Amino acid sequence: MVASLQGWYGRKALALSGYGETKNAEENGMRVTICIGSACHLKGSRQIIEKLQRLVAENGLADKVDLNGAFCSGNCDHGVCVTVDGELYSLKPEDTEAFFENEIKGRL
Ligand code: FES
Image (tube, rainbow, N blue to C red):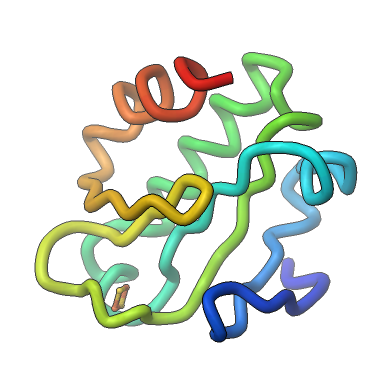
């Protein structure tokens, strides 16, 4: 599941390789990072990751969207901490489809 460690905002981020993402996206595409810290895990980060992986694959965006996991960034107060190119969002699993349409697909 975890193939490599990468720097991200001074923290370690886990690349979610093995889920269909491509190396091209790591270099050129949109970087989407989902917190896998314990608080976000309890709020559904796993479901969000699985939904985003499916949506990225179904929309043929694996070469444009780089999905990553990250440890706690201290933004645990609301939903699951997700960033898009460094911009912070707070998600519930049930909001993932709308988030994908508006903030990922809608920006490409
Ligand atoms: S556990 Fe996700 S931001 Fe803290």
